[in-house]
Length: 126
Image (tube, rainbow, N blue to C red; front, top):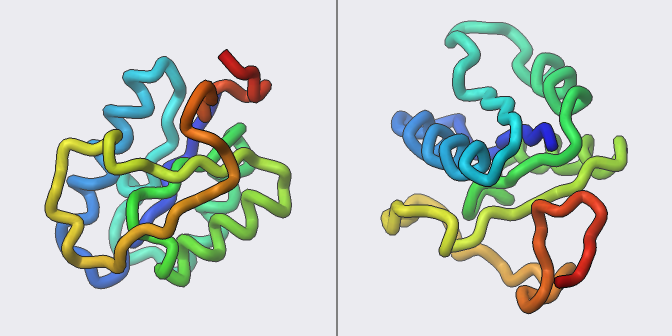
């Protein structure tokens, strides 16, 4: 599966560390990763590039506590509008425990944690 990483960047000097860790995790699950953190600084409109990246993917992986970011919200809305799977990063999927810069992540009741593999595009229960 091809997966785009979505997360907060604006105002974050260390965002690349979070994106790189997420990329390592998703790639470790056997997926192809599109990481927007590798785009160069100084471009006029990142959102158009990000939409093109999302178009090439099957899912987006939303970084922990990034839902309040305006850009991330736009990416989530675009992904849903184009029928992409939206996967939210869980606490257990990160080595970093210093997510102090954001609000706590809400619970997402869209799937049961028991017997569900969010990386399975067909949603099989195991």
